[in-house]
Length: 292
Image (cartoon, rainbow, N blue to C red; front, side, top):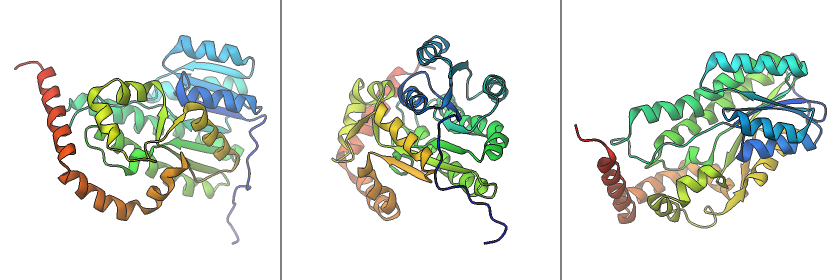
C-alpha cells in the first residue's frame, strides 16, 4: 500500500551497534558474545561493573561496558549517550535485564518487592528502549524486549515476575506496530526454563521452588542453556522476527493459551498439591516476618 514503509526482510548485524542490558551474566552476556562474533559492536549494560568490564575486555575494541541501573531513567539516558559517544550510533537494543521476587503469595508478599520487580522488569524496559528509539528509527534498526513463557503461565507464588513479563509482551507488540510505520522493527523473546544463576536460586536451591518446578509437565520442564537462549534472540534479530520462543515445545501453549489457561487455572485451583504448596509458602513467609 502507498505511504507504508516496511523494513527489509533481513537484518545484517555485522558493523551494527547493539545495546544489551543485563549483559553481565547469563543470557545477556551470551548474547553479547554471539553478536560480537557475528561482527557487531556491543554495549554491555549492567549494574555489576567489574564483571561487565571484564567481559568487554575479553571481546576487545568492539565492546563497551557501561554501568547503569535500568530502573534509573536518567541513568539509562546517560548510558545510551555514552554508547553514542563511543560508537556514533545505535542499531539494535535488547532489553534483557530482569529479576525474580522472593517467593510469596500476593497476600503475604512485601509490597516493596513487588515494586522492585516491576521497576526493573517492566519500567526498566521502557527506560531502556525509549531513549534509543530515535536512533532505531534513523537506522531502521530492531528492538528486542525479553518477556518469558511465564507471561502466559499461572503466577502463583511469584506473581510480580509473571505480571511484569506479561506487560513486557504487550509493550513489545505495541512497539512493533509503531516502529513499522517508520521502517524499523521490534520483537518479543520468550523463554521457558533457562539454566542461569536466577533459575538455580529460584527453582533448584529452594525446597518450595523445586516443588513448584515439579508441577510443570514434560516437555515444558525441558531446560535450555543461556547460550541457546542467546542464539534464539540473535537469530530473531537477523530475521526481524516478531517473536521468538525457546525451547520450541512452548509454541503450542503460546498459540492455544486462551483455551488452555481456562482449564489450567481451574485445575490448579482444585489441585491438592498446589493448595499444600501455597499453605507451606505462606507459613514460611509468615515465620520470616518480624513480629509487630
